[in-house]
Length: 226
Image 1 (cartoon, rainbow, N blue to C red):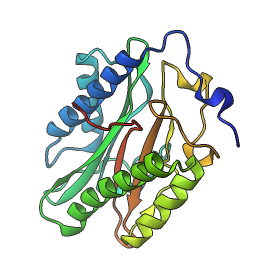
Image 2 (cartoon, rainbow, N blue to C red):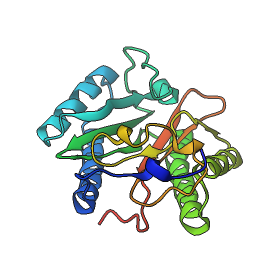
Image 3 (cartoon, rainbow, N blue to C red):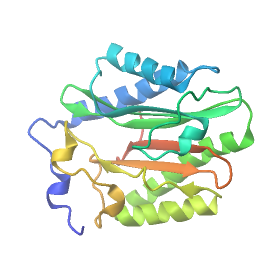
Image 4 (spheres, one colour):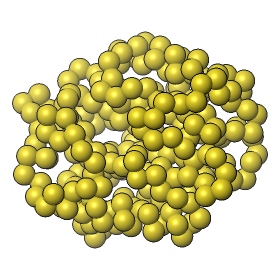
């Protein structure tokens, strides 16, 4: 795939300011959901809670299903179902990934959270963000293509002792539904993704233990949440 052409198109209903507001709304929802996750909670109950949080915020509809993954389920691919009945422990890791729709615009946000003092969990949470920031900076500074970004991310993960889960790779985002423009992965495109139109996702997996970490955000010229 060598040209942006229609892959970076937007429709008549797309508007920059509401789209950026949707990004902020999504980030707040991720943190709100995470704040309600408690030790001893079953993963299925956390997803139900997340659904209620989004509904209360006027974001009942989502362009992708609600994902809350606990412990060993954090290694799963995007469409792979979680193992059932996983309970969050006192030394554990989880992530939230939501793709809500509000008005005409899509959001997509995800982050990792840790309970307890397991050093590998805390390192995963820190490293996934460090890797995300590094990959984002290469995109902004050097104009890497989508394919080059994920090749670079794979190397950075390996350098830090992690495995990159390329199934959780970036994608388009826009007015709902972005799939009318492009429904594939950023990791397959051979052009520099334009700002405001693509989500960068980084998912890392421990090489020996069964857990991972995840972070994603929209690619912008200024990543500030303010």
